[in-house]
Length: 232
Image (cartoon, rainbow, N blue to C red; front, side):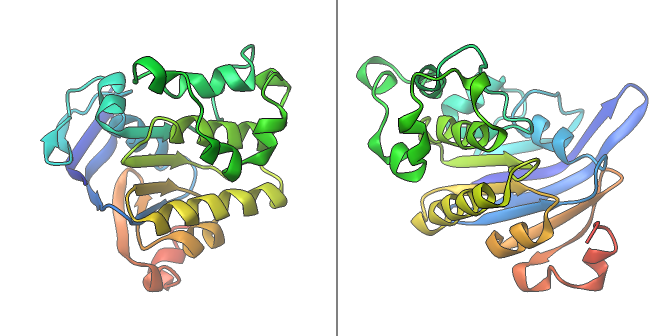
């Protein structure tokens, strides 16, 4: 589904990403691990077209999307739940959800599926509340719901547990697990909370100083070669 080959990126004279290669398959959760400042968010922004790729390629469903703009990648079936949520603070919950269907047309762009409320019941209760008035955990649920309304084939999560209370972390874990079990969507999960990632991942990669320093299957995540690169 998603294939990244020898991806390099620069910020000025700094070589921020060095030869990154990874793949995410349909029905699979890939965990992207690493300490703060190692290039995880930079990589995700390159995958979504927010930042340019200097060398290497990004392929999605067999198509080279390395040069596509973010909205074009969204139209191809990629969704992004960014670090910090980035919901529209002055729009209502309902309006934020409708923004998730911006790549669609006609009725498909105006009807919020009941499935979203089943996953996040609190959102149905708060449809007319402004996004900026929600708690951090509620905003995270809104950001995930907004991404799901685009009917993505691949969803990218950037630190979904950051600053979130434990009860809502459990809700988010439940939703990601359900998405994985559906088998029709690929998941790339960037996460610092090791136990959360370990519970959900099929495979993992660890970044350090902009390059992959460890990778493997879920049962290899607890190894010393992984933990020495993480704050666990």
